[in-house]
Length: 90
Image (cartoon, rainbow, N blue to C red; front, side, top):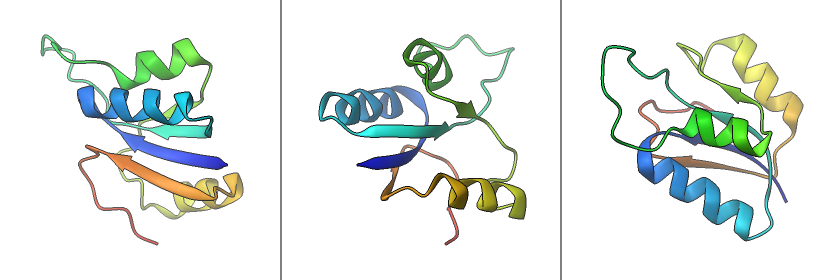
């Protein structure tokens, strides 16, 4: 099953790992940019995506028409959100 995932922090990493273990195909991951001045003590969704070879994006506005179109082009069967900070429009 094709998925697109919106995730951040440890909860995001756990959700992604669970989906991969269950056999889901993750077409793309959307996350937030880490604050470079902050010492991150939690899991990095971007790093996990890179390690797994999954495209990762960190747009300022995921509801911008360009991103909405990009997500539609991925044709996910389901979209998951794990600790993502913004509401996602349909």
